[in-house]
Length: 327
Length: 70
Image (cartoon, rainbow over all chains, first blue to last red; front, side, top):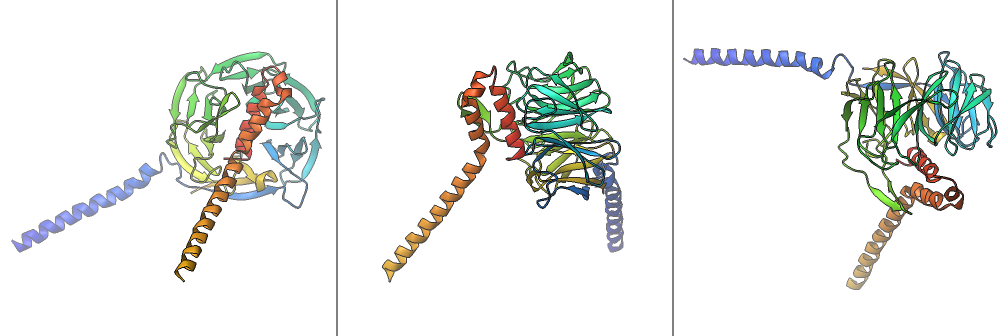
């Protein structure tokens, strides 16, 4: 009897052991989520600008070309700068003014094969330069640009702020002719509450992160909503009445970028565990794959054609380029 | 002796409150920078004269929130 009990106990133990082994084998399968690594570590490979040199003063927009050259807008000296892959300054253009090739407040930047597209904060235009930083022309807009994405030499997608507050993405050609418009507002809201950062993938899918709401949304190329996510559990941000305007005072998401696999990187703002440093990585299906943390706070993130990630350091005096190591 | 202790306690509590008040005040000043800039912009006669000038104040406010705060 004692022997029986002992053998029963042994059998149970063996079953439990088998169960644990199978579970242990399954855990990595499920947690890897289709083979995607849980952890992304950033390895710094390039630094441009520091407090001891005059390379950068307060950079805002960044874009890199296929040769590894890096282009940056600098708000402090009203310029557009070009650096080589090693971080040496190759060219600089622009000065304060409203003439051709001059800036009042250079901000966002994107590039096509031939051109660089620069937004102005206080002018309803996109200023276009070639890769040698020679001014070419400007694209007139209905209002100032909230975010841009160059889709070719003759097509640029822009979130335009206008008094109409349509909350839509506008597609313009070189002449400023409106080619297409995609509405993204799910319900009527104020201009500020509908402020978004966006990116478009190669299939024309649109990814939006709201700046003042916990909402990340994907639309397909026909403008149909595919999914919507709220990662931080924020129901509503604080608002304050300033003059006659009700203004949200807490930023939720700051920027978005797509990598070459189509994964979406979203830079969190005030509500993130590491504010303005946490970057949430989502699959094209909207599944949260991983979170990486930038070494310093940043206003933006940019991922180039080789999946290098760029962000800010030293409050805008420094630009850092990282290799993303998937572990 | 007792009286000195009471005075010291009162002084310490007062100091703690003063430090707390100053800290909170500093946080408020820091976090209100973009709001103050938006208020100045929206009341600026230049932007009031421009058609729908407030949209430019909005872009400035969002830039401030992204770049300086958050």
